[in-house]
Every structure is written in structure tokens, then in C-alpha cells.
Image 1 (tube, rainbow, N blue to C red):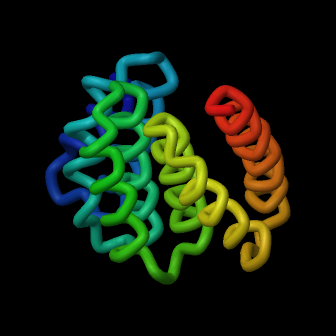
Image 2 (cartoon, one colour; image 1 turned 135 degrees about the vertical axis):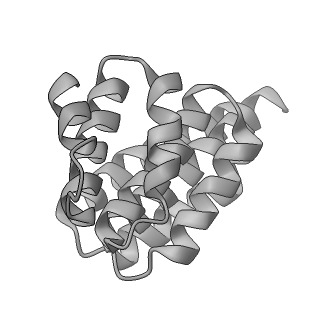
Length: 151
């Protein structure tokens, strides 16, 4: 973190290098379970001129809100990622996966299932497709438990 801060504070530093250093700093903070400190750094990056960095930052903002159980904010931030990160399929699909998690927490299994089925059908990234398949199985199990409880 100290190295990233030193790099970021260098006068005349190219914006793309500064953005990369800030992303490394935010990711390090998030991995160290200091999501509260990572959040403002990600927020600075969501308007980065580098679309890939901005997309990753937007997704991570949504993910932090989700882990803070701020589901409304997480849903809005994930939607923002989807709308503004069109050319970055990985982060868009990750945001849809996060939306499905939010829907599951809200016990909206129908829409979670529809979201995951869409990912399974349309996603070209094998690891995300596999993750969506696994989550889809879990949602179907939760849906079955819910219907058995209501009988």
C-alpha cells in the first residue's frame, strides 16, 4: 500500500499509471478485509479514462455494498456497472452474478433463476458460465425448499 501511495503522489505521473496504482491499492485493501477503506478508492476510479479499470471499480463498489448488506445500493451499483461497462463482458457478467445473489438474499428466486439462466445461455466466459450453473442449482434447491414449506 505504501508503494502504491508513493507512486500515486508522484508529480506528473501518467493518469493510466496512477489509475493502475490506485486499483492495486483498492484491491489490496479489499483483500485485507478493509472494504470501508477500499470503497472511496474504487469510487475515484469509476470515472477512470481506462474503461477496464472503471468497470472493475464499479463492480467492486457493488460487491462491497452487497457484503455490507446494503442491498439497494448494491443493486443500483451493479446496474450502473452493467449500463456503463458495455465493452467489458467479464465485469458485466460478474455484475449479473452479483444481482442474482442480491435477488436470492431478497428471496426473489424467480428473477435470480432467470438472471442465471440468461448467463448460462449467453456467456462466453467458461469460468463465469460454470459459476452461474452452480448458483442456478443452488437457487433451484432454495426454490424447491420454499415451495415445500408453503405446502
